[in-house]
Amino acid sequence: MKICISLLALVVTLQLVSSSNAGKVERLVGGNVVESHITQFPYEVSVRRRFCDACAYEHYCSGTILSSKVVITARSCLQDAVPQRTQVVASTSKRSASAQDGQVYLVEGFVEHKHADIALIHLALELVFNELSIVPVTLATELPAKGTKALVAGWGQLSEFEANFDDGLKAVEVPIMDLTECRKAYFWTEVKDWEFCAGYLQGGVDACQGDAGSPLMVDDQMVGIVSWGYGCARRGNPGVYTNVVLLREWIDQNSNIFIDFL
Image (cartoon, rainbow, N blue to C red; front, side, top):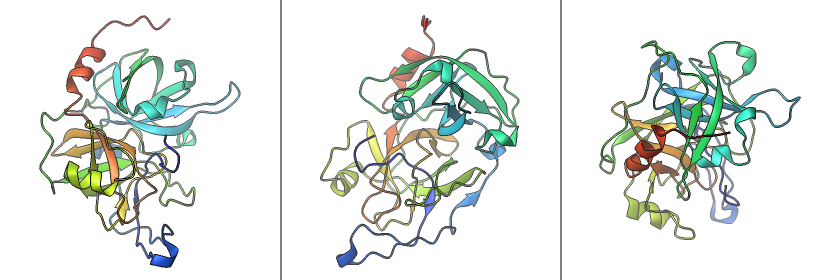
């Protein structure tokens, strides 16, 4: 995670930014944020971590079911993580362990890309698909055209400056942006070839802390992974996503091989 660049979570905001108060954002939470259920996103899982032996597991990021034993997430989600303190919870619409729903899966190991913000979580046991709330995702074969509406869901913060998490799954719709336009928006840093933007230059709809790793979907196919952005829903700073289409070969190579994690 870069300095001043946050992992993303779903937010919708009304931005009131003056030239004398640049960067300050007033928020009207609601609007296009939609309360969702896991049956609408049955490929999505909660990636939970605990940070000490006595600590409880807590939602940290989202992930996407690729196969019965592999979950796709963002590499940044696994920074300093160890398999023994990481678990995946499928078939749940809630972020909290107190909800006592969903199916908990232990983690066998991680495979992290050397450069791109993508990683694979290999599970200790196979997921049990049920066609309702635990379903493998379909990966897109090409990135949709500029302006195509995409859907992203997650359990992150509802505003940038407050840790106001809602326990339920939320979803928003954002348009795919042209890579050139994306790079102009982030002229002061580097948007890699394997990244792209989705959102609005005027801000207002975005993702923020807690939703890194969430899938970006177009026509029920995964095109991206929530990765980073400057703030949440700020004017001129759309969300940046890892391009799954360009990384399909890496995904294929690292999802089916035997790895000795011990």
